[in-house]
Image (cartoon, rainbow, N blue to C red; front, top):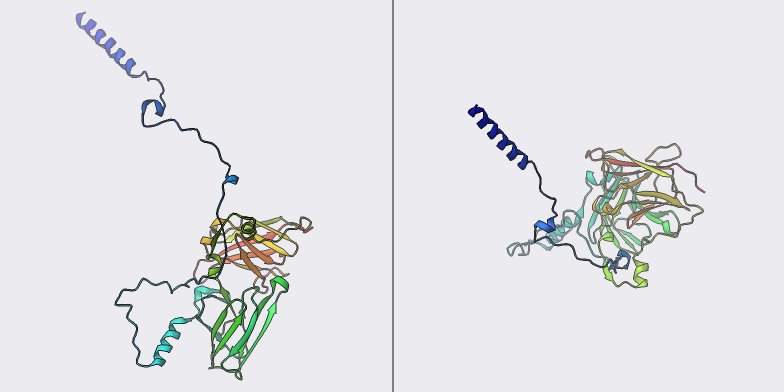
Length: 344
């Protein structure tokens, strides 16, 4: 009996201990149990529209190094001038360093795109009985074209589009194979130096265009005045609501969703506008392709240009594609755009 009462007493004490452990204390906030955490101070709210922001607009041309030209800072030993036995070798060395040649990664279909750099030499391969088209920037006007060898080459100029969408082309065709020539093209914006080579196996460059990377990097700061506001706007024309069409759809046709995936597509009058997000500048600029009446791509071209976050296309097309990369490098990305509405 005594042993029984001792066990009962111990069991009762153990129960009291367990009950005491299962009881939680009162809720506390961080500001009550931690003296380092204080309640936030009250501040006056300032709308974002009232905050003055510094505007930036394009001012003037600043040369930008093309791929391969960015080099490490040379050491003192490297600063020593390169010695040449003859002046001719010095000239040949300088021309070789300035010469740009086509690379497979810079082609889109049959179009070669060079990054423009002042005083660089651009190699253009041609072939007899075939025309090579050198396309200049939209709005650029040819002043003169000079060639070293005139009798053996046929060089002329023409243009596509009209008004603000006018774009000049330089057409080149050699009379025979195995020739070399140099061409100087001066325009109202810049100067082009071309090295022409005529091949023996009918290998030629169908089209040559230029990227102008400096157009998106040089800026200067201006004050927040009405003039600066006018200069720093998107540059888009006033849209006519009577001709506005926003019924477009777009999707990733091939590859992964790119950073330049459109956020809006619409058309008005005689132009189509494709809007991109802010990450557009950190990625490769896509190439625009349009379909013909049979829905096939590659037979028609459209004039377009990039302003800010917009790609402005001269013309209205029901079926378009934006593409970067190619099948060769395995990084082909295609975004398909279709019009699903009727223009007013």
